[in-house]
Image: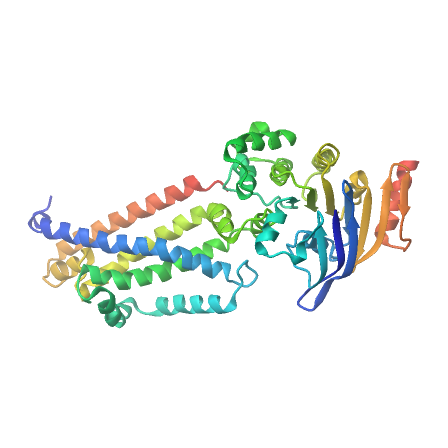
Length: 249
Length: 220
């Protein structure tokens, strides 16, 4: 579903991503975890080419994004949803308009737009707030609007950049529940970047641990516990293991 | 109504009309050309979606140069250019040329600065949804910054009124010119003061309207 092949990215001489390869399967909920500055957000942003890699290839849905021209890339991005830590809603658009704009961009049939927007807002439980502006919503509600906006065009993939990092723990759990539903009910492949172990542990099938611009480890998380694929010591892997043990106890 | 205003009523109406024509033309130029120039300047900045150092540097320099001129000198400097496009450098129509040029430079700078306030995340969300440059501008940037654009235009219009008072030097007429020729040069100080009062009322009305509209459309 998503294939990064030897991608590198540097910002003014600083190598943020050092020749990373990663494959994420269809239907997976994939976590990317690491300390600040490890390159995890950059890695995520390479998937929809918000950051253009200096080297390497990016493939999503069987389409090599790195080979596309501008117009084709814009088209491809319409089937890759993305949500952000700070929601990034348009403050001067209502909840309805914020979701509808993503349909407008994709030339979704005009007559069916209203139904589709309401459908998406129902999915995230906000159908009663259509005429509100973002300033009138709580953080959790704003993130739900952002999720509805990202879902509107039936994406194959949903990229989540620290989706719960500015939310309270209980609201955070609700948002993770919504994401889990999106994966289970709609079959959307999800990639989540987070620095919070709980987030990763609660919904991911597989976790990539980033350190210093490289993949340190890839870990399978499943109900039985945590299974290392690539056994190398790392702070986050140890943390993950501990969380797993606590569950077992 | 004071006698002196009754005596000069016809002239006053004519000069108010001239001011409206000059300021109106400036507003049209500001919106039709200042808005796109300011937007382009913003989009060509470092790190923005059309990043282009050459275009940015040229536009930035032009806007700065035009705004550096004492306006009276700009009017005189532009006389050959005005004559080229209008056919004459004298009169209200000719006055529109320098006024439009300063209007474009003035408003484009305010537009560029308003756009800088749009959170970078909103741009990123737009890009991630596959928006084109045109869609980013009209469906995101202008929506997010609309109250700033209105407030900027309000400030600009008030400056245009002030600039228009100078146009007497090329026979552009207007309230300012009337106040100087009849009020000041003919020692009718009361007439001059009445003209200043008209200007004050005009500016207050424009500022009030602009501020009110900006407040209503701002949902941030």
